[in-house]
Length: 125
Image (cartoon, rainbow, N blue to C red; front, side):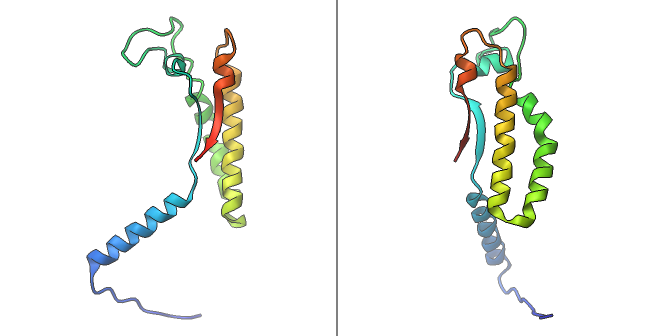
């Protein structure tokens, strides 16, 4: 076992370097988003318009937040299982759970024409 010693002569510079390293690590992880680009999706989801007016008499459907909350334990388990296999496996596990959230959202969104249901997608950035 190797032993080593680190001496820090400039605490502010060391803190700045550690912050840069942490930001770089976060930047390497792609963002996965599940959502809709339809302008009325927000109103259907929350039951009211952004201005505060009523969008749905029946109230919000929460077609994205409810599936996300239900799948959070699955996400934690999937990431924990994939950590030992590397970063690509973690990304695959995250994406798999995102597709499950998308499927759950599509199953509960109210559909008159089906446009909102078809507009729900998973995007990786």
